[in-house]
Image 1: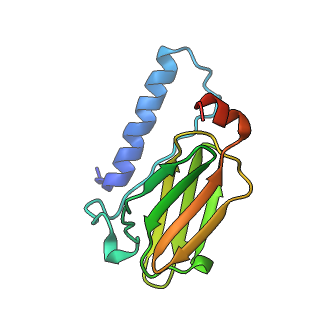
Image 2: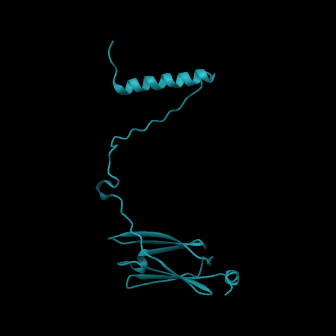
Image 3: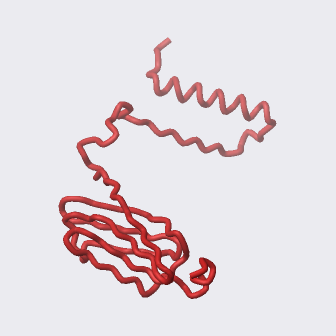
Length: 144
């Protein structure tokens, strides 16, 4: 008897196991069965092979809250305002920045709700300042 290769042997064992499960559960024989198999050809690969993923560094963020605004201040060395995207959900602030040397992304939970519009941002000497307006009803909740 000729020995089959390991993959064929694996498929035969898999087919036997599926048939056994079908028999134990009284599954009709003609019912289709889909099995997906993924094979990792590089099981001992480095976490970042060849440096293809850009490691993002964490930047400290200062949050300053006044009676009608929230200021978020953070260092973004080497970034200009045209390299920075700011997204506000009303309760969190997302900062995305990228240039030829680095990529940065940070999501900041804000201490209170803010308006999603009317955001002012400046980046001078590598320091980003984002000023967000609080809604009037949020000012009353905080007792300002």
